[in-house]
Length: 163
Image (tube, rainbow, N blue to C red; front, side, top):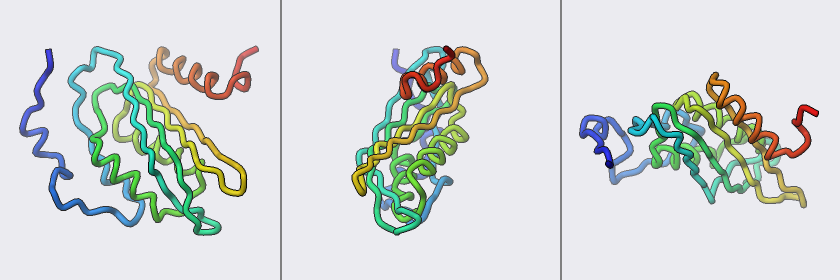
């Protein structure tokens, strides 16, 4: 059975207007969440942003990336338009690739308190080098701590094994 959203919850969302204001600076406060209606299932949610941009803090040149966000919600889901505007807010933000991915992961973990979240950046090469930073966080549950360790091992084979 598909549960319906209540109108009071939907009315609290700020970004449903037709006049979208795009942030010009890093704006974590723009992120919004909605309740997860199916908290008993271990739903895996994947969000992909194909057009992420930020600025190199040293050269001020634009960096382009595909951002992968995977998470298992506990009580909340990220509202997708707020996520889009939040990611857009990095456009004029000067930060290294690794910092962007860490900040995104931390901001989303703070907002959602999911069971597990990982953020992967697939940055386009500049100067012949592609950088693909990874960051993850999990709840204190042993099940999700093990998942975090397993995903880290999958992403970096051999580097984090216990042998």
